[in-house]
Length: 233
Image 1 (cartoon, rainbow, N blue to C red):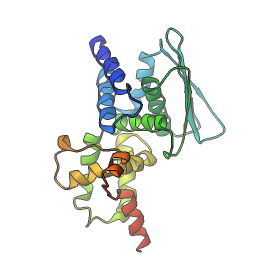
Image 2 (cartoon, rainbow, N blue to C red; image 1 turned 45 degrees about the vertical axis):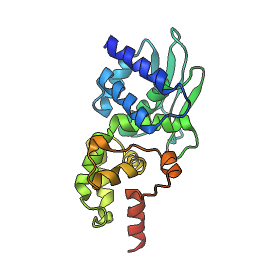
Image 3 (spheres, rainbow, N blue to C red; image 1 turned 120 degrees about the vertical axis):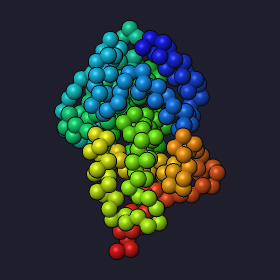
């Protein structure tokens, strides 16, 4: 693991040399994290914390506000960083919050406190990066997109009244909440359209919303199509 860990550190330095990070580069680093620490299911995230216990102190607390997922105080070694997670939430949400805080630890500066609040809309670039890191860790796009598209076949012919059940099924399969599945469908909308159009999963153009906007690319997410379908009934 030591050589892989050095590679990971080198990739992180390159990745965050500039404050803005392309989504495709962030995904690449998340895959390195997954391979280095052998995180292949959402539940294994806590075994990673065990492996990092000399660097991160993990604690659990039942906060009264269920909107607070957790927070991290990042310190420079040898002083441990501190992560606290809210136990009032579901196990799936707890695990996603653990992944979210972990990517704050991997990605972001020391001496800062980062909080995870439920709901994925955020103007904070760092919160977006932590959400993207956790989402790609637990729902890798190379498996998630084919799983979604195998259920849709043709985007213009799909019965979007069936989408809520698909989200339930995918959430159970990946060990996450339905909200995380919806977030993933939203964030990967352009990539999902490409795959449905026959582009190979390894040839997808991975673009952020900022890049889509700058190139005047407009596509509707499955969530938007579901909403429009509901309005028409």
